[in-house]
Amino acid sequence: MDLRARVALAATIILFLIFTSDDVLVPLFGERFPPFHRNDVTFLVVSRARSGTDWLDSMLNDAVDVCARDEPLGDVNTWRRAEAAAGVETSELDRRHAALIKEKIHAVTFGQFTKYMTRDNVTNHHVRCDDDIVTARGFKWFHMQGGICPYGEGKYCGQNPAVDRVFRDWLRKHEVRIIMLERHGLAKYVSGLLKTNQTLPKHCETAACVARVGEVTVDVSVRNLLAKMKKEAKEWDAMRAWASTAGAAFLDVQFDDLARDPVRVVSDMYAFLGAQPHETNPHLLVKSIQRPLDEIIANYAEVEAALVGTPWEVPERRRVF
Image 1 (cartoon, rainbow, N blue to C red):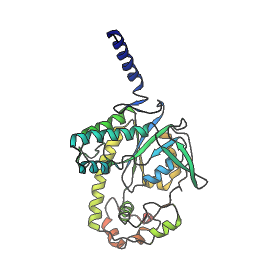
Image 2: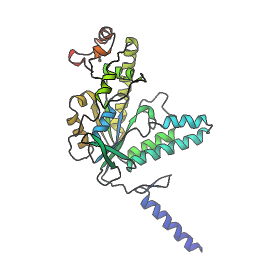
Image 3: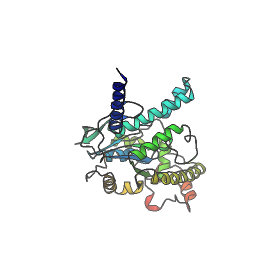
Image 4: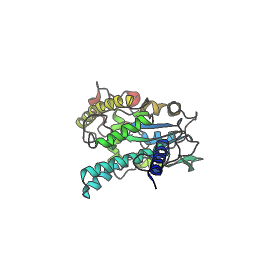
């Protein structure tokens, strides 16, 4: 092949990469994805554990044109620890870590997953999230899963600048819309305590499951409770400050509002995501704890007294879980 032919071939390859990299090829991987429709919406649900995100995911996914993926980055920190234990050198591990984050978030962006919808009380309706009917795709993310550091400090911050850069570039390039689900107060704290009981299910779908969880009571350390709530309040503030400016648009949702009127609040989310109007089904997951707080907490009188005068004081009308 003479020089002119080589130049022509190189130019052809460069032009092909320029015109296909955004929509077909994921940079650095060479992995093929279906064409990405420019009017589609990419979103991120930002929250903390025990804040109702699984319930929210089930309601978002009740609309056929919305696909919400459950924590695709949830296993990345475990993977990194295993690779480090296997002796992978830090710089190589950082490179692999950034590549893995990029692969996972791009797979969601381009709909490389399937959601399962419940119809007629049976989970039997599968939707491929790269289908043309889907116009909004996103996933749930917790602060400890890496990729960004809204608090500016802590053990999950600054571990790998390449990962942070991948996450920020994704937020900017895809004009990601951010939904933040906040949950504060005593009920969230108690939910976290119950989660530590490994014999209990984390979520319920049946009355029998609810009855089993209902047999359990907890003792609450007042000192730990107040320290935890103060720490979480600062972290929520930091997360909100980050989330409100990190994406192309921001919607702040309070769990109490969601619990009070889930259909209306999720309808507002559908509108925020540009999805078609739909009346979601709020009963896809059942509240695992349905007893009043003063029946769940063995030392409730002590806890109630300690919270008087704080932002987390429990009014009479809200002493139910």
